[in-house]
Structures are given as structure tokens and as C-alpha cells.
Image (tube, rainbow over all chains, first blue to last red):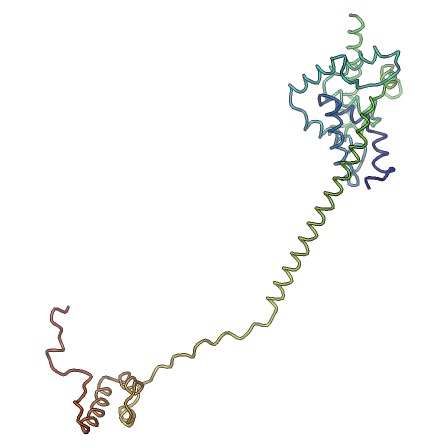
Length: 165
Length: 146
């Protein structure tokens, strides 16, 4: 089963990077985030056939494992410090000419409240629908949609603030 | 919301999550293999446990349903020597523990009669008479007794 390229490998191709990005919203660095995703993926793979929506279940596994790894506010501040450091591994990748914008977006993302941040990551980079996000997070669909709207508004405000400096 | 595209959404979508490290995929494969092996071990343990439990249950059922052996009769019951008539006792000519026991179970008088009889036989051969109970009054009460 573990060698089946059409099985877990396809899931990893489709969602691997987004899952690591989601995990990085909780844990300090990329290595920790990859550990979290490995653990979450094994759990997902073992129980995926019992899930009503496997994609939502996969992100729920990542979310649960990542929050188990979190060590309170101290770890959060470490993560924020790490993200603020220029040498920290970037969370996003894009055209080289947009490097400055990428940094601004990552800095704005890191200042969003975690519930909004996770919804934004699932929606934009995970490609999940609002019902899937709602299932992964464990909230009503309306709540997931409103958190997404607030996240966009927060990002926009933060980016505008940065551009004025 | 989906009907009116947000420019910020479009801009965010031009970026993609950073690629995981090159070891990431290999590590996931290793963990999946390890998990599969662990799962197999757990299943084997459960299967062995199930077989052992089934064997134990079968042994219990066999033990319960097997015909029970007759209970051990044990030593032959003690048959109390019933009272015998003085005449029957007196007819026995040979002195023995059995005869004396039967006589005593009947009554002290029967035993005394038997002993007298045997003594009278012995007297014929010059033996002193044997008495089971001393008739002298000084032996009937023990001094200092309650």
C-alpha cells in the first residue's frame, strides 16, 4: 500500500505543500511542520475510508496534530519571531519580481487571528470549499465563510498599513 | 462572494505554498511503511489472542459437557456395632477386641458378664479373675474431684 503511487503519493502531490503551510500556522518552523504533516498523513491514510469527505478529514488531521504540537504562547511568539527573521524559510513561493510583496503578504498573514488564518490557507491554497472547511474546522459553514471574509479584510488592512510606512 | 472576484484573492492565488523539503516524501513513505508493519503486528497479536481465547473457551466447554466420573466412594463407612443381646455375646467363646467392643457397646453389664465368663474359664487354668469395673467403693469416688 505504501508503495502505491496512485494512492498516498497522489494525495501528497495535491495537498502536501498546502498541508505544510497549514501546519506552519501553528508550529515554529518548516521541519516541525513537516513532522506534523507526516504524523497527520499517517493517521489520515489509516482511516481515510471511514471519512465522509477525505479531503476535509485530511486537513482536520493536520489541524489536530498541529494544535497538539503547539506549546502555548511561547511557541507562538517563537514562530512569529522566526517568521520575522529574513533568513526564515519562506511559507509562500512566487515570481522573483514579487519577492517584496510575498514578504509583505507573509507578514500580514502571520498577524491574522489563527481561526481566520487557517480558513484562508485551506480556501486559497488547499482549494477546499466552505463546507469542507467547516467540516475540517468543526464550525458551521456560515462561520467558515465569515472567517474567510474577515481574513481577507484583515490582510487588506494590514497590507495598506504597510504600504503607508 | 464567489460571483465578485476579490483582487486580493487573485493576488494570493498567484503565490503557492513553499515546497516541502526533498526528504519529506521519503519520510512520509517510511512512516507509512512503519505504520503498516505496526498494524500487521497488532492484527497478528489480536489474532493470536483470539485463537487462544477460542481454545480456552473450547476447553472449558469440553470440560463442562464431559460426563462426570462417579464420585470417589472413599473409605468404607464405619459400621457402628449395634447392640447385641447378652445371650449372643455370651455365646462367643473366643475373647477378642471385637467381642469386647460389642459387649461394651451393648452395656457395661454385658461386658462384665463376658469378662466374668472368660475369667471363670481362666480360673480353671489358675489365672486370677479379671474385672472391668472395680466394685470397691473407695475407687468409685476420686478424692479432690469436682
